[in-house]
Amino acid sequence: MMQLLERFSLGFSRLAGREGTLRLPEAIWQAFIEAPYDIAPDFMGPPGYKWEDARGKDHPRYGRFVYAFAKHVKPERIVEMGTDTGGTAVGWARALVENGLGRLICVDNDAYAQSTYPLAVKTNLERLAVPESAVDLRKGDSKLVVPALAREFAGKVDIYLVDGDHTYEGARADLYNGLPMVKPGGYILVHDIDRGRKMNEQTPSHPHPVYEAFRKLAEEHKFKWCVLKFIRKHLGIIQTG
Ligand SMILES: C[S@@+](CC[C@H](N)C(=O)[O-])C[C@H]1O[C@@H](n2cnc3c(N)ncnc32)[C@H](O)[C@@H]1O
Image (cartoon, rainbow, N blue to C red; front, top):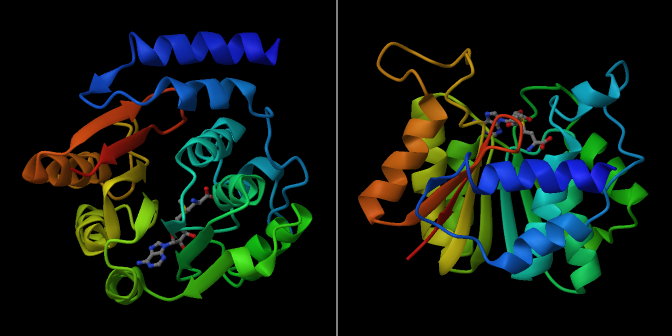
């Protein structure tokens, strides 16, 4: 039943909900359909959080999609800017373990669910039996940590997920600061670009802050991009040239 529903929403996204010029390989969709419905059923948030809140109210489909994406891309290195308690980190990490290669580098300043990073994500990764050596959890402000990572891993990152500061300036800084570390042909994923949703970070000059930063990067560099609308709060994907 779940698989049928997923196929339907996928069909909708790929036809009616399609936006942008990037066409993802068929194998990614196949991996998504074949993936377990919830890639981390034992996922736990910090004390006092409900299960849904612990994932930033994101549908398991989001973690499941990033899992399928990494299963297909077989990345050597993923950088995730904005990890919180690990809703997407568990998806990346499970794929890396199953692929038998790759490392996940997470960045967070512990601003949202305070005093939980990196402990909560560590616990969730342990529940999936992810070896410590597969993950590198860095704590600090992205404006400092991402430029440092871009120097350390210049041109060596296959996938860069941006899901941190949702102001226009913050999202733009994370995207532009991280770009030098992404391999040519690598992917940048950007969450929370749904233009139908009211965001606390929106301003009169930037009514859709993260979406605008995403499109600016894609257009300035003539990168192909698409928006996946079947993922709650929408996920943008850029493939670098
Ligand atoms: C929406 S949550 C990330 C959700 C996560 N990807 C998931 O799937 O569960 C955004 C995270 O970005 C972090 N964050 C926000 N601004 C930041 C900054 N300037 N530097 C580092 N982390 C930041 C917050 O602490 C929060 O944990």
